[in-house]
Length: 178
Ligand code: NI
Image (cartoon, rainbow, N blue to C red; front, side, top):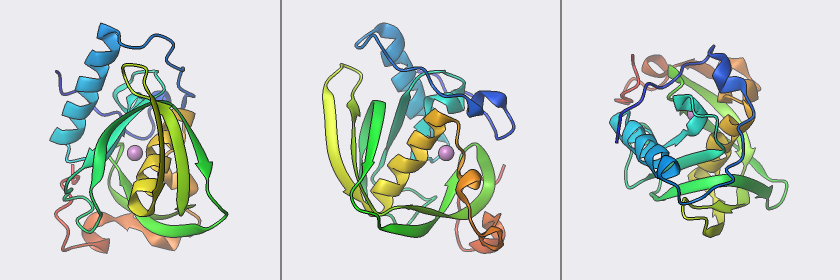
């Protein structure tokens, strides 16, 4: 396992549409999964997408018991999600604050579908199908956006609700003030 450098907004590699995984249960894939989790945990992240460490692969990891970056969020099971597909369940959206390890020190208010179904595969090629709502649904939508070259600031509708974490949430030790 290796802690990898997290690319920051402005890097063109964050704007690509990621290539689908075609070979499962390979050494390369398992190594990438381990690197993603290690890098995410060291950064206190709730999720991390392969493009954020420069890997052009349609894979994200997410999950936490408790994260200092979102102290009020309910736990999300640790998950590897490959070649994901998201289907909104209904039209309802809700606004919520988001940050991103590729956009350090900032937060923005982002609309996301309230309820979704997400599907994909784990690293062994086993099918995953879940329904999620609330922060879990938001997290999956945020991470999967990275696979189509979208960073959350591209989803912000009201830039009056976009700013520095230390100003917006001075009580929060977000651990992303680099
Ligand atoms: Ni992100």
